[in-house]
Length: 202
Image (spheres, rainbow, N blue to C red):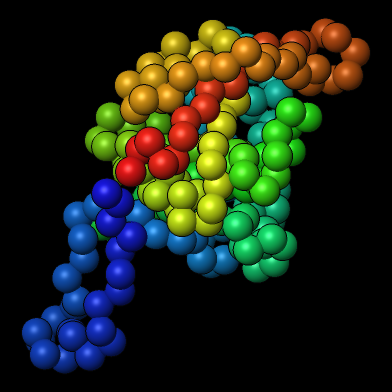
């Protein structure tokens, strides 16, 4: 089960004579003030994940500030209550995040199908369990929100992500899509969809 990093009482530092203790690792809902860190992580993760798939100049031009502005707006006004952004922390340092929303796939029922729109961990912080903690928190959250299925799209050539999800009990379904980066067919990225039943993960 996930550690949602419940804050310590405000006066704990007065009792201990120092700073409140901080969990070594935790997962909790994101705050608007963390949008800059989320933008930085997303750009770093995309540059690692899409190296060799997207042109180098496209990856170099990714702007963390632009991503941060979008995340800040989403965190301040998330729209539907089930739109959530969760963050993974190592101590007080934000090292990963996941964004959950109702799925808008053509074959989905938005009442019961959730989508992981993004799950990313700072490349330097991978293989430390942060991704698994985020994924567990996502499954716990969508189950509590009444979703019956949760899906994620990954690049068809991304064996690392495929193994990450399948090792956690996820499986591919028959859905696939092709992203046309520029709209002219010059850069296409094939993706496959994986899914799990949140109730089965309980």
